Amino acid sequence: MALVTFSGYPSSGKTRRATQLKEHLEGRLADPSHNGQGLKVVILSDHSLNIERSSYDDSRSEKPARAALFAAMQRQMSRDTILIVDAPNYIKGFRYQLYCAAREFKLRVCTVYVVATPELCRQWNSERPGGRGYSAETLDNLIARYEEPSSMVRWDSPLFTVPWSDSDVPIDSIWKAITEGNVKPPNVGTQAVAKTPSDALHTLEHVSTLVVSAIMAEQGVAGASGGRVTLRLSETLKPQVTLPARSLTLSELQRMKRQFVTVHKKAITLGTVEKGTVDWSEESVGYKFVDYLSENLKP
Image (cartoon, rainbow, N blue to C red):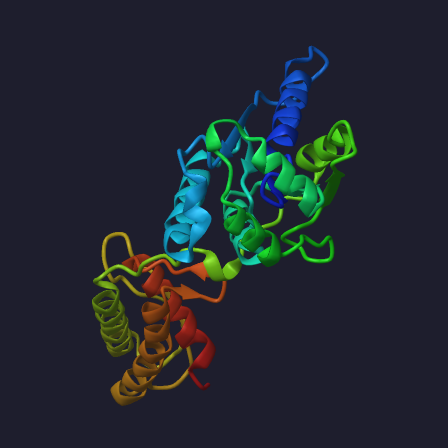
């Protein structure tokens, strides 16, 4: 239904804000006045996935940690879930990756930017009980590398900024974004391409050969009168073709067949034609070939 991406410095208060948002959303969904679909609110975080903060100490350990978060997020995405991703999300490329995944599932998106000064982050990090904070070196490194969200780019918008001095998240604005915002279509470059049947080329050659043979046989019986002719290729396949009022030679029909097959071989390779998938059944190929002949045979 929606993806809410939290972003901010480490130890800036993202988890507190994510918890506030979850409580507000669950309250609105449970309200008797809410007449929308039944939704669940899920927070996904490093903590819920048992990802240690030491994973951010170096890039070698950080990459698998980020991959685990992304994989878990994809598993949780659905049309009946408001998914809150409570993680640093400090790299804009990773936020773009989350955005593209949300588009694949046709979810609404928004970003919550939790703002706190580096000094406050260092203080709050040092106050974490049981030594569960980031190391001082890692914290400073993540702050230095942080790529701030921008409302000017599509993967960060709509963007809601929550400074440390605010007592709560802007629930009204976030609620509107995740319930009424635009649902963007999947990115064309990330859509799966339908696979072509393994016998597509055989079907193409076989059916077009049957059509050529049927035209020659019909012409032998009816002569070169031309007009609309029904070709009986099988019990179920009886396409009609418009023939010119002249005698067609086998070499001419064979040339048209080769042109037709060549054009459609590209579709076999790509699996699609323009924006749609291709139907490679014998019926479809037969009707396409007779239409091709009707349009391209000279009078």
